[in-house]
Length: 150
Image (tube, rainbow, N blue to C red; front, side):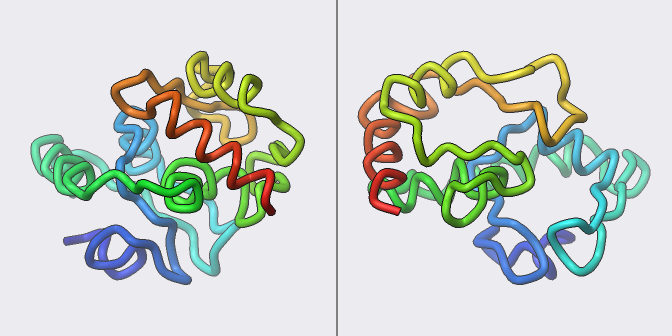
């Protein structure tokens, strides 16, 4: 897989690239097509246009990354869905949005509604919305409990 050298054989993430399991397909596709500066990692992620990585292949990659079991702990869910933007300790990360003071209700609202969903190219503003089939209310509560333990 073209992603494995930086993101790991199973999308688990490495020191060179983020964990990618259960990707937000629209955003992940945008990143693949547009690349990303190397702010968080030593090297930037290059853009891969359709001639280098076809849409069908990209869909196969997303299907593979979606095939992993959903984490069942707050920590696992946080690492899968929140860490890449909000940082290891939820203090802001590249999104520069500290979520340590958010309670379950605040997190649930943000998860369901997203933030600046029309600004997909803005890593500091865009947050996708997840519905109950992607993250249940109980899973969001586990994430909130985990964040409060940090």
